[in-house]
Length: 483
Image (tube, rainbow, N blue to C red; front, side):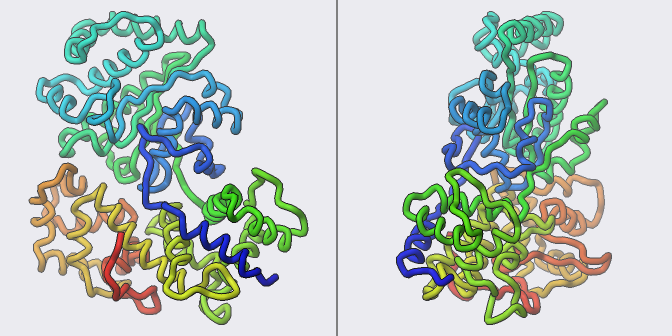
């Protein structure tokens, strides 16, 4: 099938209008029509699975926002047969905008002041829980948060009785209650605050499993999950064993992309023609294209089959995902959509396809720059760490990274950064060679990987923007980087 010019323009206009750089938050949910649910993510909505793990861009805040939004939560409940969510009461116990948005979630400043008073973190979060259920279960509590914390600390048995009363209320009314915690890395400016507060959230989640109708849902970054210090309490292994990991397979990414084309009235007709030419049947409304071979054929009509003139350069369908993957071999939907959007606005348009391999390579360069920019929002130290590696070539021995950092004084520089967020948690370990710990931190956030014990590699999604070389890899951009 050869696409008509008007079909090419229609699909290209939609793709070029993607705005994947914007992100959601627990307090600001994505519209329901933009939410795509990979099969593995459904478990993240399970009432009995309190811990959800994922890197930046994998959907933690999408799902916390969806759970906290009444109308979206009801739509999801109907669509995926999560009956409890249709009538559940949900409150945000902590989220990224806690300091700016009115509600029961305490701000980092309030949390820090309570820690200075030696208030047990679990007492703090139990107070937040009590305040949350009191809104729904007709329980009278002290209106002032500090006074309520003192009451919970002084009268633990009375607090437990109040929470049991709330549990009974939800049982009688055939309802569930869920308290959601997101953006735990924003609990404080330093790990000396974040660690105990996170541990307190986890402890609360574990203790809430003793209730019939009340649970916690915690969305946590992968590097925090790797920090054993926050799981150092009895039965924490139960939470770790039951975790849900937010992963995106290639079929999920293309499913999301095709959903965007199906939902947009400008591209619906052209996309349906492509599907019918491939599958021999019309595309039904709201149906999904999830099978690998069907996706590959559809995308080949949109982007061309190969990353060049023949198979030696690789197939476009697999090449994009492979070159956008981090060291965990995971590709985020944001990087994927950024690549396609940039390819659709490339400097030179193809004539017989919507996008082509030239635009896709430009798209990967842009996606790399944006991914590093967004990574630096969570890890302000990462930019200096990568800048000090510019010009190196991977794969290489760990000593190449360590030697460069020692030469440039990188560890000292990032330790002295004045930021609202903490440095690498690994640097807290009592070891002499801090550069080795810094290397370990990059492994834990998926920026580098060990190919062998003696060779490390940096995936293209970070390497390109960091101006680190690799033979045969995507070239680092020579034009100015834009966000």
